[in-house]
Each structure stands twice: as C-alpha cells, then as structure tokens.
Image (tube, helix red, strand yellow):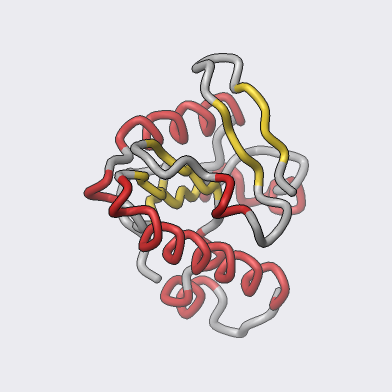
Length: 144
C-alpha cells in the first residue's frame, strides 16, 4: 500500500505514491495534492531544450508523472481536492552537479531558495489551478 505519516509542520496526513491503489488513500474532501515533477516532462519544451533528443527514460518518466497528475486532478476536482504539478526549478544539488558549468548561466539556486519557491507556489494552489503545471522559478504555467 501507501505510507501514511504526519506532516510535522501542518499536522496533516500525507500519502506517498508507491502502488496503484494510491487514489483510494486520498481524502475525498477539500485539500491539496502537490506533485513535484520536472519541466523535463513537457513535450513542448523538449522541442526547444533537446532538439537532438536523448535522455529518453528521464523525459518519459516525467511525462508519465505529469499525466498521472492531470488524471488525478480530473478525478478529485469535484471533491474540492486540488492537484498541482510543480517544477521546482534549477537547483544546485548533487543531482544537477553534472550541469555545474551551467548553474550561473541558467540561474540555478541553492536548495533553500528552491524550497521557498515550491512552498510559495504550493500555497497559491487552488481548485481553479488544479491539473496545471507551474514553474516555481517564475510562477508561470508550463506547456504540456
């Protein structure tokens, strides 16, 4: 099944996705599901950022994650549960270290700054934005 635990800051339960029964674990009343994903799953942006292709597994897995978010948004909208997909932006982490030569040019930020950006967009999420894909760097919607 899914892991359920208490979120220490808010005192609210959260559920992590581990199996296909995830939707059955989500409360069927007002709330938020936040999916931290990546712009790597945007087909439109791949045409610009990856004109020669490559890195198939990563891009395909992010696109699948994004599709899950859209489907969840449709499923839970009538219950008042907002599903917000968030791209955290370019953060200076061990995962992005291979792109360290681009950090300054591309505006990579320290993880603490990236986390604040995600929190800001999470607080803005509402039923009117459910199923949309937001770039936490600028608050704009990312095209599919």
